[in-house]
Image (cartoon, rainbow over all chains, first blue to last red; front, side):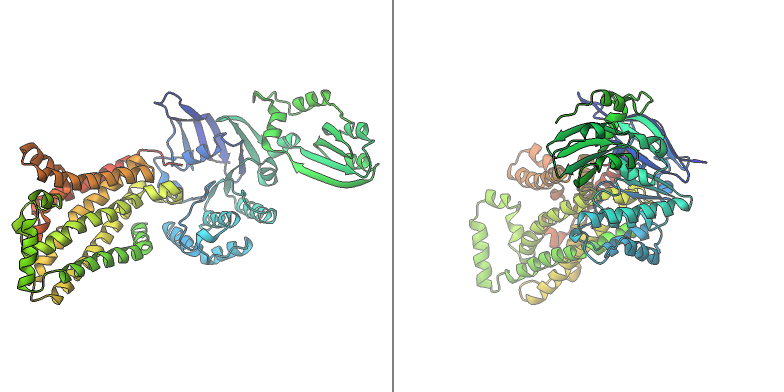
Length: 323
Length: 271
């Protein structure tokens, strides 16, 4: 496979001449292969957008360099941009224009646009192109961004938090579009701060924190980092806390009256077998934030010990059942 | 793809262009209607001017009283003197639209993610706003011709005089657009750029007037740092504008745009 996007020791420091320079990105070495969907994960302020802005030549690196299609992103920006679809994290278009005019304008700049394909995309995303940009909701603005990024059938998509503001149904449509795009042998590089979101479509995930690349993992290797917060509400006070805490994959269990809350990773069946020994009134499942998953995986210092379960085991030892 | 940004900028701004043109055109027609219509009325006008203190007239941008005592002088002073200042407001807004507005609201990211070099964005947008300035001036010219038709007994000048006088405003307008575009690429933020560019235009106007108030040689020389000084409004209809001054302003405008491109090419785009 070819390397489509490559960064070497990419560093970006803001305010170099000021008293308090800020390094947003530090020695980033990253490779995105042809035909893969790579997720670029990190908490807010990790340096994801900075990386993307360097790749698109909006900002210039302090040191190091980046290439796309083997070409330097600064020297060959126009050539590279012909083959890229981009969705910014905060999409700001010309508010008084209609979506259709915007699509036509950007289409012309890209050398023409297939309106049949645009209509097809708009239909899939249930998007009305006739309104003025200022009248669209956040979710709809995201949809026009996705259409603008895809409409010229680029070879590479660079998407900054593409699903932010999309409802779950539209997230599924977006995932489908990405998988179709990948099926054509094309490449996607997308940033997110939601782990569960990228797990559904990405082949590999790069995790960034404080401007430094912590790890690049395949999604399969990352699944054991993932966990959910589960709250079970029983009709009567919880009597089975000890049994629940003994279930494989259950951590950090706490009881509060009729409710029990814990972290859960792995399969659900063993949990359900135990949990239903009492009458369950409600079950709430909440995705862990990236920060929570990240802490479980790397600990506070951000250094991976190579064993994803190490911190979880530690937590298990410290398990405290409050009743 | 060359020319698309240029055409799109004009398409989006045609209404503003029309409003500016109609506004200045209305001012032009109004000035003709304000011309004294009888010899008695004219004598009264001359008496008012003569009674005014020279300092007050200089504050209004008149260095030679005799120059505004003719109908041509009156139109030149009342219309051209203020039109360049009004066009200064237009030019600052236009210059900010070259890069600062898009950069400030984030749409520059979308534009620069397309296969278009940064210099092309600056060139095409600047040209589009200069064309808008020309259309506004063309509307001003039409208004002067129409205005003159309404008062043939009060003023009779060949059409070329109006044309050359209006053309004389072009270098000043182009300079203000280009200088603002340069300031905007240096400052990045629209609000900061607007303040600096506004100060440049108003400062230039005030420098021209204040330097005319004193007889000191140094003040007279300082006046030439103001781009307003190249045009004597009261005499513009009769003597036109110096070709050398106009060329100097165009040359400075080109230098500003080259500077703007260099700045924009070599810096980070604001988030």
